[in-house]
Amino acid sequence: MKLSIITDEVSQDPLVAIKYAVAQGIRHVAVRSIWGKNILQCDDQDVERLAELFRRHDLAVTSIMSPLFKCLPIDTPGPHLVDPHFVGFQPILSNHLDAAARLPALAAAFQAPTVRIFTFLTAEPIAATLTAPQIDSITQAVEDWPARLAAVENEYVCHVRTLPELERFTALAGLSAVVDPCNSYLATGSDGLDELSEELLARTVDVHVKDRQYGRYVPVGDGTLRWPQIFDRLHGLGYSGTITLESHLRGDLDGLDRSIAALRKWVTP
Image (cartoon, rainbow, N blue to C red; front, side, top):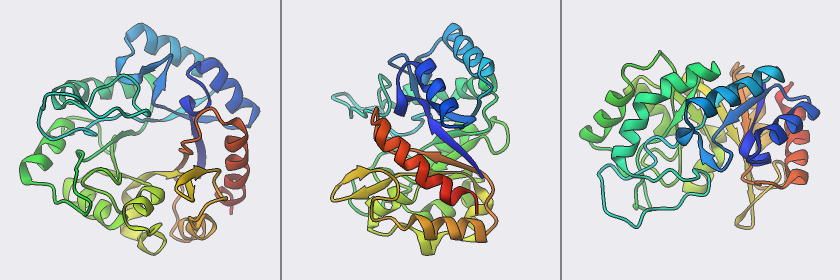
């Protein structure tokens, strides 16, 4: 397994984030927002400047953490959801469809093997089934992408929320998976330990790691999720892909330090 951190959890200044990663001995990063902009708002000059910084410091980009399809499945007038993790990118379907055409080139510029995507926002408090047209919107938007580049994350405010739902949808759509046990926990109260199947992990290209306690995010290992057992299962099922720290402790370097120290105990068996 390779451990990756998200640059904007450290700083919007990529050089600060890069120096932090290097000091931690981490050689892999994921990109979501930078210089106060969503990665999808960066122009070609921004992208080349950022890619050069990563090359200069010998860091590999594991994922473009795009907001693709974290929006309603139809265009609606505002006001729109403000998502602090997706700086400046409005959840409007037409914007997302335009972005889908650019994302493969963006991934190629960073030599990133994964672009994270979602399955439309839903207001339903329980699992809501994607309609055939909604599934078609997602699959058609990425049908010309390189194989395995598009990776669906289970997200508790989207249609695919849990690990069984993620397994079924990615098998149906022929897409890769980003497994997020904490999002499953927020959706159902289960961290997905017993639902990490061999079939799901065969499609998985990234596992996101964060932790919760008393209704808030805490350093990984300090919360209620059974991370030691989850990693035992990942090792037992032969998972060897990316582990991305998505702590939601933006700017809390002590919390990031503690999370990384915990992950180091589990990433290497």
